[in-house]
Image 1 (cartoon, rainbow, N blue to C red):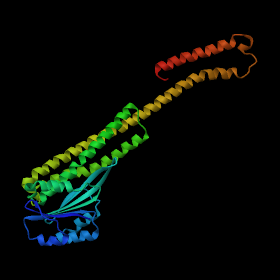
Image 2 (image 1 turned 135 degrees about the vertical axis):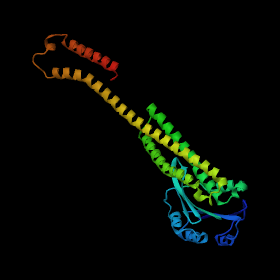
Image 3 (image 1 turned 90 degrees about the vertical axis):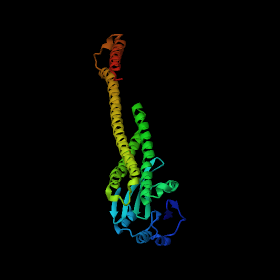
Image 4 (image 1 turned 180 degrees about the horizontal axis):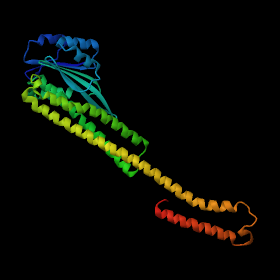
Length: 322
């Protein structure tokens, strides 16, 4: 449940430490702790709450998860909730990350589907001049990592939707393809729920309320994340419109196929109606029938029926009913 517990002083990484060693660092103003947790139990969350003096409401939210993206301020602690997404075997799975940002600590709590934050740590450690700015830069790095992971998922969904749309226009689609479209539509709804509130979160972090956690010299980085969230929301809306159009086209093509089949059945029914009517009359065994006394009665009757059927076939074929 404890992924990592690291101390950074003046932008440099110090040896990892245990939870029991954290109180000894409280007097150091040049260092901060980054504690990473993965689906912690209640006992561990209570220990972390006591160590860092976290608010009980924020701790409860971080333990139970199922929160929407938001940012809240509890005293000198900034509580941020992010929705994470991960593509797994063609399906989009969602999780949550809860961040506690204090003057000298960062606590990240991950739930559900989420990529590990080892690349984020490596990125921060490779830029000590930025890591020296404190927990605010770590907040930016995690936020940027979560937002950037939306782009590959959107690209994958967009490529799959374009492929299905092309198959629809070619007429090569089945019931499974329509089911996949509905799955993509559901994933996009969840992705929109995850990405849309981030615009408000980033915009809120850029206000003067959080100058203690987001210094002026790293605000341009948060504006970059804000721009990415706008692009993601625009891409989600574009793909949703494409999905809606593809669904409408699939339904229209299905109706057109049914109409075409109905027309062909009606055309062949009209062709069969002529000989059926004529031969049913001649099959009633009347006493006075033309072919009984005329040797050419049957050939003339068959020729007449064939001529009428041929004329009707050519007419229906020309009008597109056959």
